[in-house]
Length: 115
Length: 112
Image 1 (cartoon, rainbow over the protein chains, first blue to last red):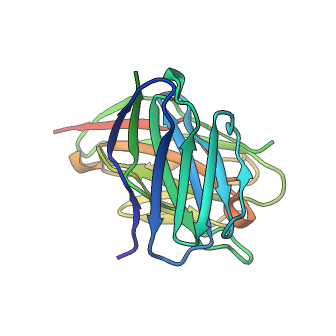
Image 2 (spheres, helix red, strand yellow):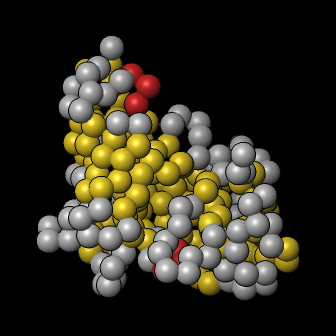
Image 3 (cartoon, one colour):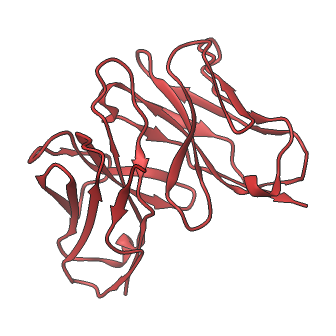
């Protein structure tokens, strides 16, 4: 069974803390993504990676960074957490399509609260 | 740029009612279109997809047809069940998925 696993379901952090969200996939997918999900806004892409050590900014990269040292692992880093980063964070992975899009597989999400 | 506009919810239906959730898109080129479903407490999972104009995606009784002339990909189901209660997301994707766009999501509640 294909799997994308996020390290935490719920996190509570203090303003100014450095926060790491981890995501691991076991499908040998090239692409990995981090989204945040907020009511009424749908999913917004934070960062995307199509290969080890490669990354691209999404729509809302400010305040975030990412790391992909191994193919199966993609980390999202909040350098200095702020209350406006309270959200649901979703990790996804997919095969790198040759001609057509392939589906994205999602983790269960991490609900982060910054107090 | 590419974008997806999805019918706002929430939608509340009785069991066995007919469901339509509207989705329209704006895109350059020829995107693929998707419907994802998010059940309570879970991540998103693919419900169905269509990769070219006039394709019909279907799964679990849900259907959606890729209409290029109206730039739409409406989700339909003839008879909903309580177990269909979830949030539904329309999405648009292009080569390599690095430009995958999601709608705001529509929460569906089906009452017995």
